[in-house]
Length: 192
Ligand SMILES: CC(C)(COP(=O)(O)OP(=O)(O)OC[C@H]1O[C@@H](n2cnc3c(N)ncnc32)[C@H](O)[C@@H]1OP(=O)(O)O)[C@@H](O)C(=O)NCCC(=O)NCCS
Image 1 (tube, protein in one colour):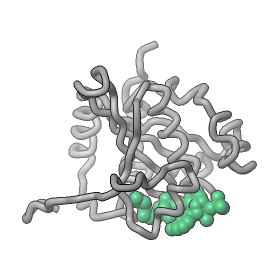
Image 2: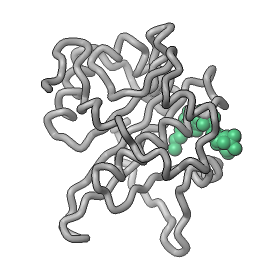
Image 3: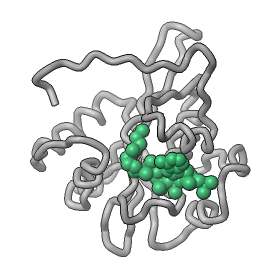
Image 4: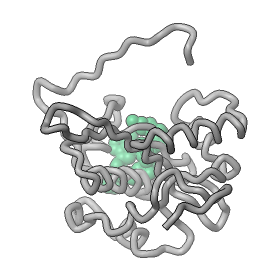
């Protein structure tokens, strides 16, 4: 099945989000999420589409960090670069009543030589629109991409977060491994 062209074009094949192993996480999925995943009509979890620029995707990201004034041509160019590269699974929640993107998370996969030429996963850019927070949507989007990483055959998935968000990720199943839970960084001046 070829991906549709135009603004409905997906960053990755949407069928990958079907039949994820939700049973594995039943204990940390409350009834709201179960209902959403089985078809609340106003909410859809899907891959990023080219048309999401007009649905407020970059405004949503600005609730996470600095985004800058990205033009539509810049957005399209980055979308296609990610699509060509492969390994970028930007996943969004749309409120279909308003045609607005209200949540997002990115799974990035990395090819390795270690672990028998394994595939490693990273979680990036998790955000839920501030007027929709506290409704389990953060949990929904993080679980979705985490289960997708498992489906793709990744041997592990990791993330960086503020100390205050450790309980949020722990509730989803992420752990701080003793002696192996530091995040280090070099920031390059002049690049936002
Ligand atoms: C972090 C964020 C994605 C959470 O989204 P949300 O939709 O409000 O979270 P949920 O409703 O799914 O919360 C799931 C659980 O985590 C808990 N939780 C949510 N945010 C939390 C926080 N900051 N600290 C501790 N627990 C938190 C909730 O109480 C809930 O617990 P429960 O299942 O026992 O009821 C959202 O607050 C956000 O977008 N923040 C700004 C961007 C950001 O910081 N992103 C993370 C970058 S690492």
